[in-house]
Picture 1 (cartoon, rainbow, N blue to C red):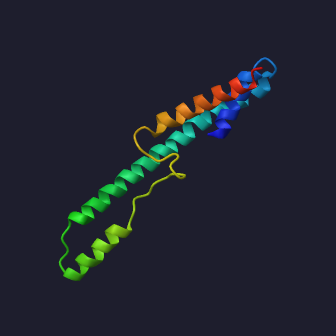
Picture 2: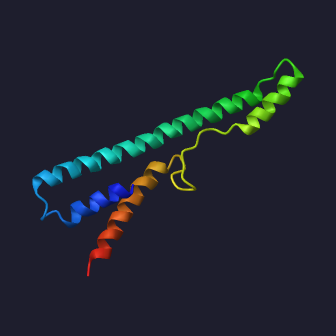
Picture 3: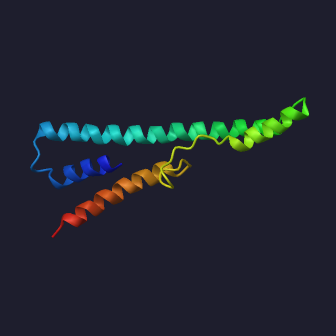
Length: 117
């Protein structure tokens, strides 16, 4: 995300000073980065939802032997679905993509405002 903010900052701030051979790779980088990271978030969301679904199905199943029931309840408690996050940042939920793009836009605008004298 920081790389994307930096590229947007350079493109906006130095648009007139950059030649075409520098602008094109930067613009391609913006589009690639703005597509790759949200797709990673979406794949993580799918994996997380499927993991929750599997754990819920295990908790509803009745096992034949009582020992298996005890083992499976301990296993279900110990298993956690896959969550891609860094602290509380980029936790996957329905609003993750909007938060990502809002952060990019906010960071770009703040960096531009910081350079104005």
